[in-house]
Length: 294
Length: 294
Image 1 (cartoon, chains in turn orange, blue):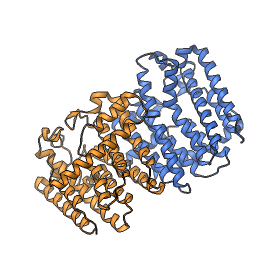
Image 2 (cartoon, chains in turn red, yellow):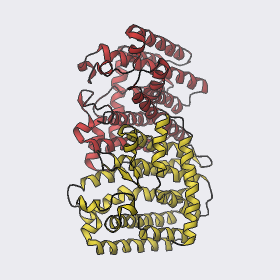
Image 3 (cartoon, chains in turn cyan, green):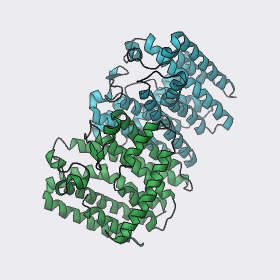
Image 4 (cartoon, rainbow over the protein chains, first blue to last red):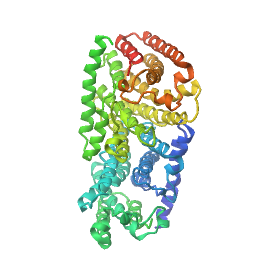
């Protein structure tokens, strides 16, 4: 990781976390519900999605502090999806980011409700942003609803569960990931463009960038499940192979998956090269994503 | 029930259901996810919340068809909350509206995700309404997020779970219901006023009406748990007493609960009497709610 990227990430993550926690702390709600919501938000994580919102906004010289609210909204959605994914009826994970999962600490009922509340809150914080026109807020809410719901993340999660019972084709696997993780990554990148009044052309290039960097991100996830240790990942490694799950390495071999990752990475970078702004932070972030070891 | 109210309900419910089902049917999502979402939406129910949106809108002579979209959005939230409430980790109900609950038919994982998707979709359909100004859409989205989330329905659900382990005071019980069921009823009534550009004074009276009719509605629910049969209710009757739950009859006696219900009902009607429009449908709906036997 370059020093510049490290500085960007360190600085932005502080501000993202500030906004995220304060948005939840200020709601008036039962104490242990808020605790449960904050527990998972504070359990760490790479804040990849929020960082994309900020990296894109700042690339367009947009210094509006509302970008942090959008970043927080997308992290609320991501976090609620992890809380629900970890439930015994779903992935039944007891460890996430090296810590006990939400339902292990708070019980299944409260974990379910904390997830629900984060899902709902994300739309509320977008609606309540200051200094953003109602038109732009509506566009962001619409994009987030599509990205997070049945047509995006939740739909991808359903496809992923289906994939546990049979081997998926490469096309089907791509479709899982374009929805399960890709849709929210795309929102993170596109929302930065929407907030910054990017041109149609810029937005189109960024959406294509999002498509490919999202798939690259997911392929790296699959590779890490094989190559990294549980300690590095903060979650159980080798789970995909053990559960005979459809993954890129399973379909393409480990070598083939690495080639596929590089393919998507290079197309992603070529999309950035079409933009007439300084894309260096976004490029460094892209490289970090595909080279990360956790 | 008066003939006029019956006509209103029959006619409106057809249009509400049309809008509700078509909003879900037209999304592009995995087939059995949509099936699971539609299963619970189509499992019947009284459509009380949507009927309030329509009754209030029509009281102000507002004929916009978008009122049906708002009605559908609130029913999506209500339905998702029932799906999640019925889960084994929550109320563990196998019967709802006389039919097997969502997780009994589709499994817990899909039921959880169908609930999540309905929660998210409700905000999307509000954002995508035609012929409604962005300002009004944002106001509705903000109100719905507060009503449905940690500060409203979900918060109330958490308080309700707490109430299962100890006897609540009357004040605590009211607080549960003002959040768990009251917040969404209030949204239904207030959204009709917002859509119709009601005056501040009208809105204030309607919100106060919502407060009292919401509590009356809940007290009748508690009374029916004692007085109605499982067959009438389409769910297990007598469950509150069996589980030693905090209810109005448990705190006030059955007679005291009935008196309290009448108190709230009369205040609710007095709020309607302050309005300078024809409130007769709303009054008939109020009476139906507190006199219903299921």
